[in-house]
Length: 238
Image 1 (cartoon, one colour):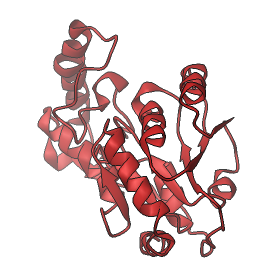
Image 2 (cartoon, one colour):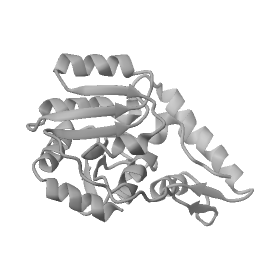
Image 3 (cartoon, rainbow, N blue to C red):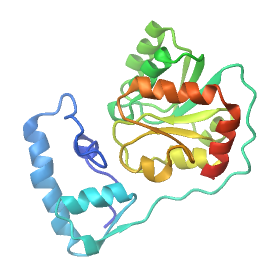
């Protein structure tokens, strides 16, 4: 039994137990998921074993009644690319590859870009129901943000960036982070789910609190001002 994800309504609590309730979700729905759905999944697990892609998810499962001896962590893996050759850009090029949905926090990144002191160019890859809303947010804020939709050659696209940003409100083990790190690209991510298991703050990237655009802006400003640090973080992340 492989448990790759949780219902989005409670996913924010993976590695973030104090997460606020998501907008538009009833208390009855949340109660059912925590006290109905999760116990059913825990019961099914007793018929075999369950694999979780991050320690954060495994801990969440155990705290909700899953038998610890039946829960195993097997993280995702990607093939290493060749050494990332830093591009020469006049401004910091920050890429994000994610579904354009509430949980991925793209709106927080746009707020951070508005607050950042250094000029930024955002390259946003992914599709979702919030695309029109996010494009309008970027337009009203005067942000240089390019929305590319879904692309199949994400590694090639990331090679043209200076940093990958993962501004999630909730996440398990984002493949985009692994793809970036495999190519030697530094990552700025939020302290949710399994992201801190991949990105060690100050060693292989920078980790900031979720839903904190000022902290995210400060992290991006620090990398914009220090190309050598970007290269070192990317090298360590491989």
